[in-house]
Image 1: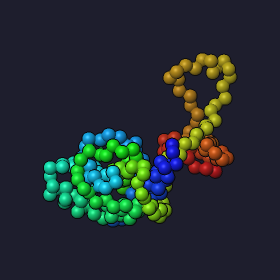
Image 2: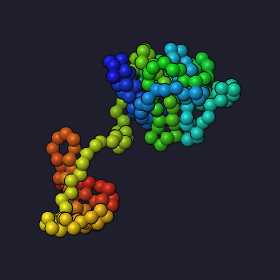
Image 3: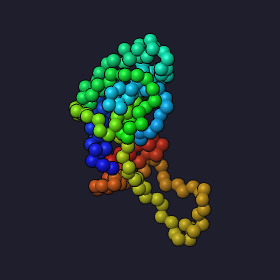
Image 4: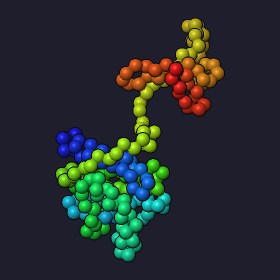
Length: 203
């Protein structure tokens, strides 16, 4: 990954994750940019966007429906204005057509309840003046962290262990059970695990 792409990734995520529009907190996810023959609103400098959902309703874009597309842009004006302000760019459509094939990134911008979903395609050389979004605590519950949970099983003799075969059940006691949370970095955290509730509580 080049420095240009790394900077673009950081700028897009930093400006869009936590952005608030009409009391909706938005989050962003980077997608690979590829050829897309579907209809996009195409702007200057090979920037394009496409609305997938708005107001909880799935949308389909039709280049031949001028009045419908104008009404869609008008309804999404607050959303588009917020994205423009966050990234320091202008989303002023020139026409409707396939996504530009210029090398770059596509970012999926959506509200937590999926009432709003917008795709934004940005080339690597786009001039972006990103404004970092404020901290949004509601996004913290949607961050995936790789961790391992170690559970101490019953003690088995080598002879008993040798009799086990795939599909055998090994009872480890009633929930919650003693367990240790093992993050990839840092100290292990002892606690108790309730497998049914999918809940780990540290001591």
